[in-house]
Amino acid sequence: MRPDLRFPEFEYEWVQKKIDNLTTKIGSGKTPKGGSANYLSEGIPFFRSQNIQNGYLNLNDLVYIDSEIDESMKNSKSYFGDILLNITGASIGRSAINTLSKTHINMNQHVCIIRLKKEFSFNFLGQFLLSPQGQKKIFKAQSGGSREGLNFKEIGSIKVNIPKNFDEQEKIGDFFSKLDRQIELEEQKLAKLEEQKKGYMQKIFSKELRFKDENGNNYPEWEEKKLKELIDVRDGTNESPKPSKEG
Image (cartoon, rainbow, N blue to C red; front, side):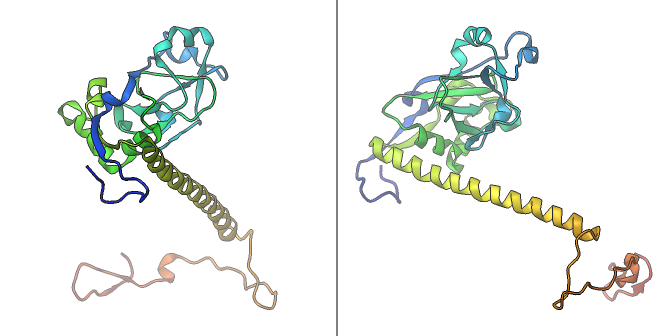
């Protein structure tokens, strides 16, 4: 199996494997006994589905648990390089790689931990799950095609076309990760511009900020008018609309 487009320095075949054959762990966490009453402002990071976005971890609204609760939830500890996949509710299919450098994080039952064997690249599989093809396979894997939940067996059954060569896996994953980073930076710039625009609109339309003409003089004062004084209102229900004072 060979892809139509690939980096020229690689010639190894690709193979098709189930996610189950790529991993050492597919599992999820749980909500601590007592629920949100155990959430703290510092401690062990505790991730919920809202913290898993498409391709990145959202640290807004992040909560924490103490070390005792964390230790009682050993099976839901996640480490650097784990792929975190939302498996319930409207956010099913959202995934991100655990890129946090601390020893570990923990998470609830709505997030699945996918931990790969060393010979497979988490960057590659992470990008595959975000791709249109990967998303299609995730939703197809759900029992009955519903969006209610995704179990571990269904996740493990998803088939992935993957290079035999680890370096090629890494290069593909890194290529898309850099694109994601560039998109993220551009989106941040756009968000700042949109905020600036809102600020200028508020100041300009409240007349707090005024432009001057080419000679440095103020423009004439603004007037307040009703909309009907500025436009022609027509009845658009007929082929030859007649002017109307209202509409």
